[in-house]
Length: 108
Image (cartoon, rainbow, N blue to C red):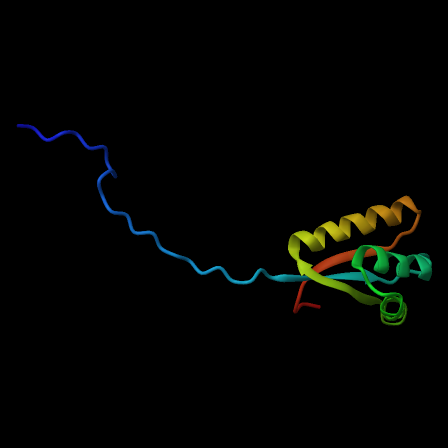
């Protein structure tokens, strides 16, 4: 009697390795100072896109104005990149050169 043909891999036990998934790296969204974007526009952006209360938005705007940059929020990479794109598009639509960037947390 002959043995039935078993395609390779069938009938064998496979061992799957589990890999631990860590927390995703977080990214800071920074607003950068320029001499043309109105302060009230920066405050509006912080309130609308980053859900900041008016007082906190004012403080971040002042940091941007006096220190050259301010942290609008910390997010996963996809969310940070989306916020950068949304705010940049809105600023350009309104004719403002506001620069918004995302960088890995812990840098800069």
